[in-house]
Image (cartoon, rainbow, N blue to C red):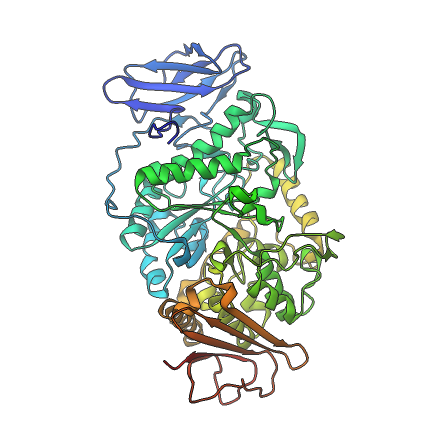
Amino acid sequence: MENGAPWRLSYGATWFPDEGVRFRVWAPELNCLSLQLSQRAAIAMPRAGEDFELLVPDAQPGDTYSFLFEDGRRRPDPVSRFQPNGVHGSSQVLDPDAFIWSDGDWKGIALSDYILYEIHIGTFTPQGTFASAISKLRHLKDLGITAIELMPVGEFPGARNWGYDQVDLYAPHSVYGGPDGLKSFVDACHQAGLAVVLDVVYNHLGPEGNYLAEFGPYYTDQYRTPWGRAMNYDGPLSDGVRRFVIDNALYWLTEYHIDALRLDAIHEIFDLSARPVLSELRDRFHQQAAYLGRGAWIIAESDLNDVRILNSRAEGGHALDAQWLDEFHHSVRGYLVPGANRAYLAGFGELRHIQKAITEGFVHDGGYSSYRRRHFGSSSRDLPGHRFVAFIQNHDQIANTGQGARLSHLVSIERYKIAVALLLCSPCLPLLFMGEEFAETNPFLYFTSHGDPALARLVSEGRWKEFEEFTVAGKFVDPQAPGAFERSKIHWDLLDDERHRAVLNLYCELIRLRKQWPCLHNGRKDLTRVEIDEAARWLRLERADPSGCRAVLFCNFSNTEVAPALDASEWTLALSTSAGPSPGCSASLYIANP
């Protein structure tokens, strides 16, 4: 909502039941543009300011269309709601109001109550569709998850991709089930009491099927990203680019009832405007959510360790709601996995790093970073835990640092359980990656299905070079190989195995305890204390709450007996990860007696 008017998507193809379909495209520097509608002859589009706009009275939902350039090039709509034949095919007119929602009572949930579960639709189930993912919602609900985070679902080339190579930001992927499939999934999640977070990419688009630059100055040569030219957020004619991504955020919130967005790699969004696009997006998103009567959130991924991303406007910040805390992962992985301290994991590997990630957030908060070879970061000590999303693995960290190996593949099950307990007892919002709750045995690899052989080769070579420090000779998996995708699918039959059920039971119980006790979910870092002994290899995490509730998690990383100094008359053992009589290498959670 802006200037008091409710927001609706006004670009692309808009269906008016009594008038027809209005086609509108931003193309400020083109001399002419025509509409190719289904099998009809091309129709010249009149210019309207920086746009071309045309109302076709007898057009209707289901019609396919594309835009025809003066030299004969035919391109899909940059704001296409659906690409039924892939990134190079025609767009399709949709009626966004045709889907019948059943979540009218859904108002969202508080961000502080988020327990997230990240999934890749294509590998989450054997079928790899939105519809098949619905069948797993009961499992997630029983696990205790409150929010599902989808890796990007915009149309990308081929059928196998992580989604960060998407090129049609408004069109849910056709192979996954398209627009109705995604709406049905979100509707089912809300019926189950689960929020839905969508990962969106506003720092770049993929290389294949990316026709944005042919329509307008979407990119700038002033900045560079690891994927090429940066998006034009502060240069000439950047207003249309900013509107393109802000409209996209509002589109997911409004037409798809998405509860939160996770903004990918905002450190690759360059904008020196007086009002940066991130701040404007955040404000517009919250305004529209308020108009819709729902709680909705913006979560960032950032490699900057910069509290200005989260700080209020009065403090000179963007006021985003939360951000991923990569350094929680780096600290835990660096300590648990021998030889892990390479590339961006360099400098981690001591208990004090885990201690700082739990009690303060950013581990690098202005000190020297050996990886970056400079002083780096700012202190996040004063920001509450629910402003950070912590994890012990996610799609990037599994595929990048371990060549697809999950944490449960790299450490003993005893050490893995300690990592789980640290995550679910921390003040941060916990995020699980699909399958980790039962120690999935399949890897999660990087995979693509580009149709251009030359591009496919460049992607494979680039992947090798980018993560060469983590790659073991002879074990690199070509992302273009179909096996990379197939090997990454969740192995749901593992739930029939007693050993994997035991891991699942641990997750269920820890999440249950987190929800039950205010001291475990209040996000109060100021009421969190961590003591460590590097030599004896133990960590003691104490959480408290103004209600008087207290909990202690004692983590023994050694193989010898170490007992916490607790008065048995004051504390009750609520959970232990020890599978046998030996107390070595285990985590124990105690709750103070009332």
